[in-house]
Image 1 (tube, rainbow, N blue to C red):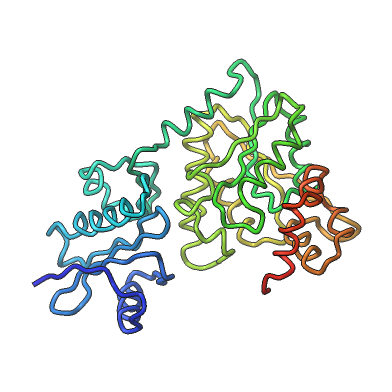
Image 2 (cartoon, rainbow, N blue to C red):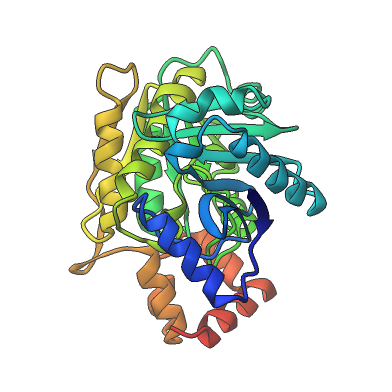
Length: 341
């Protein structure tokens, strides 16, 4: 007889059992918000988890497939999300499960040969992309795009954005929306928005759940390089090249060279691969240096932590400095300095 339950996250025996089960699929269990397991006589034969608004780890042993187990797991996780008042969700699963989840009313965002991303709830890719398209100047000729986290916005970011702006008729800057950085999403967005408030060529948007998000590229936020890195980078890069760039008529995506951040360098390489035979092309720009060192947001954060404020400010844009000089900015500097390394 099969039993289906939420696991007790405080029970180490249950955690080890789910960990061991997922190892068969070469997946590490990373303590998501909630996990459902299906057991046959006490042995785990299926599982599914939710982290934020993303459902993942949807695995069923082969001999139990076709018994309606996956929909049952999905419905339990969906009920949990609704209880948390989460009204949109994503499913990260194998391409072979597409028919099952489409039958449950979910819509495919995109799939690669190894992974499928679907969405459900009240929001959708189509409504998100329309909200951006409605704010663009459709009469413009060449359109470019940049994706940046800006944690915080440095002169390096500014150099890249100004370079790109001079190469196109209209530039879209997408700010990573996930609130997983020391500088909150609202702050990062407002700093960039303020930097280009007087330039009609530049449009600044939040990246939403389809650009470097927990749904498309979760390991980005912990800079984790493992066996899943290529899967995530391929998915996120393909969503941009095959969907976003096509729907927004983007001709060029500009990226900065990444001599420091290995994960972002891997992503840029995958993005280059995903643009093959596509209208959009990728242009990589060399990063600028301060003296002999590359300017980076991570270095700025380190200098702020060490209370080397003047040195940090030398690498920042006017809008970033304006924010950090505000009361909210001063509170954030204090938070950075108190944060454990």
